[in-house]
Image (tube, rainbow, N blue to C red; front, side, top):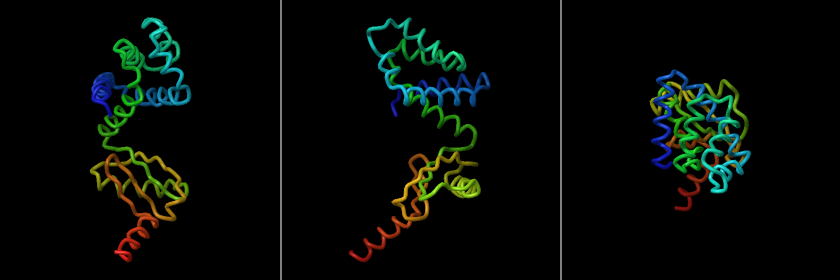
Length: 176
């Protein structure tokens, strides 16, 4: 994560808090990331020297017309500063700030099958306490190679309680 993206995210978050639109901005940034991921040409166009900065800002205003004005202004500022390639990093950092302010954190849970809502709630409660958060916003990733159990990643923390990991540990013990 670049320091530039962090600074922009912190400024955007502060402004969103002041205007009480933290969730709305978060939703708009999710949409922005989807647009960039599904249309990588957009970033190429917005960083291309073939178009004027004013034209690029106009394109952003048109594409994200329904987004909150502070999101559009932030994107236009990134264009001005020739930092539009930081947009996804900014969105990611903003999510961390928003979750932290709400006493939650994002967690990726790897499992062999789709988790039920009850299982997600149980994991959120148990692992949230371990990292000092009230709740976790869980993204479930299906990974059959785990054989069973779950691996939970919250920021830099990884809790691995999978059958594959336990077998690997047993193998190391037996082989020496």
